[in-house]
Length: 270
Length: 270
Image (cartoon, rainbow over all chains, first blue to last red; front, top):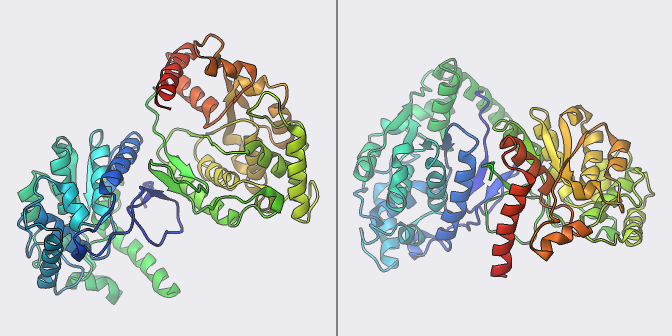
């Protein structure tokens, strides 16, 4: 709607998308309970940094979103491995946040890596290589590469706290160019605490798009108001960028109408 | 030198580069003598077009170069299949242009595809699928996607004539936004005829960077003046873009000094 160009990046996809996408040399992550989740995190960070640097030369600012299965669990495990008090603080795409299951999984992974909670406080590479998801080195590299030159909106929920923790250790110089952009649903999530996570890591502002699906005519969209989904694929950050670029002509009501149009098409074709 | 951002695109690489690169879903091309060189040219054009459209939203103009083994042979075969008088007109990276070998190879491929010279005049998809290289649908899609919005420099030699022939049939609306950007070595190549090729296809201007390596202190670079190499990886178009962006402070002498610096590093490390 705001005519903002987009570029799809694969951090380590097994199934390749049918659109142009940037390959960062990442491989699919392993079960984090193995304690050896990623093979080549350092290489991915290096390559992602080159992409971030190049993208920063063509844009005013960059919005970086993500989509990962089990993303809050791998965020939790990396945050715990790096010594951040994250138990009960990561969000969930479900109304009943299965904190116990996530914590058990994260602890199992950290133990399998021969470590304890907090052991990788100053070694984010070890943290993501042991119990992380390929998205974390990919996002960290992109952020570090781009934010040296332009502002970056890290578009996501509590998963971005894990990326922020990695960036903070690898290059704290870029923190001044970062904001987290998310949705009202994340901020209002009583089962999680994005602010509590971010505040432990760095002084980075959090913006939230005031999206509201309560008046939608689709039950599937109304469900967002009951705590289902909340974020995804940079939803909050993309909305913020669209609202900013349109100088406010794209309002939350305009967004809802467009989202409903797309939603209608999707349920028709599936 | 001119701080121009770059993005590497794979049209169908077998060996993946250790830098971020965009995947267009292309597969390595087969021997064109099979008459069935490419599997999914149409899909690659479609995906490349999306990338071109997106890139065109962030730049003033786009420079698209390429690097392919055997590229003038697959250019020749596509040009012949599309009925363009191209025999003896494609360039070579060698001083002695092996026209006979190239023509024989191209004719063998066209025959294997069950066709004759000129049969695919109005069917560029069939031409590249039969006797082309994955670079041709990739470049054609990029050019068509980008040139609807911004000017595009097609950076290359006689290989770009084949891409131009494909673009001309698929979307002649974009021709007004195209130039071919190449080097003095291609224009001065007495064994080939870029102008003669382009003039048969469309009224598209040819720019040539006035590069001159005759005063280089390296024999390997002086060889360009004897007809070796001539072009590659968008050399001419990239030089033109650098000269334009620097408003002339990057001259051909400045370029030669920088090229020599890089050349020295390369021969040191190999």
